[in-house]
Length: 297
Image 1: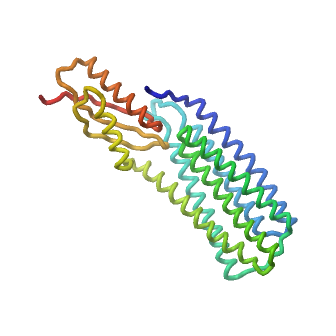
Image 2: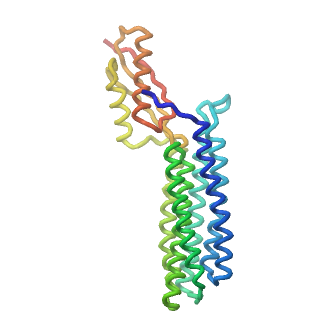
Image 3: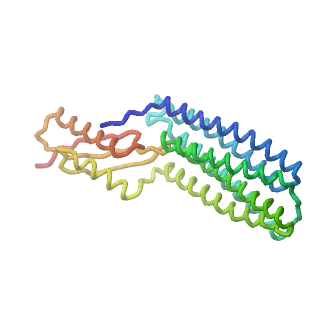
């Protein structure tokens, strides 16, 4: 049975969590900056600057959702889903920038360490930031997967990168509270975190590039498509199966060979059965074009 999608409802859900994320980011920017200034923590001030990048990506995701969820029109026959792919690219690039910024700063701090004596308030500020951003990540990734939004899922990973950078801050200021000689922990943890953020950014960019270049999905996905279509009663075989991703959703085209003696109505019914099977098999299916070919014998 074909699953119905509600683009308007999906857009509202995506916009809601993105706006919530923007408000949380505004709060964390002000909170971490003030705690860093009054708590004498350069790491927390830098973390507040990192949170500013989240506001940028929130804005990009909102634009991507707004444009990407529009219906096809005269100028965009296959819809506007690539706008979401473009938004994901910006988010991935932002993650790379954050990773390089944190990594370079951490490397300099390791080779040219500076002593800081942060106040206890900085520990609480970093811990609160971790909790808020991890909750925001889980909520955003859940909504992104539910509405099949690549931009929203990419933004969720940006939230987690902020939480990871706050983990580095917590280790640094926490270690300084235990032993002032351990202030280098902050830089070491930040360097490790920057590697994780770099990996997340590269994976998002890799996925975006695959979509922009119309790269086919993995072989097991292609096998599932052929198996699903071939199992429909009346289908003799399938061939010329073509698949691409757009905005995190599949766009498919395939040929199904049927008995040449069937009527047009019967052939059309088989095509609709194939479409129903594929929509049941793939939640992330956007559209499918099925060509019905007559058998040679």
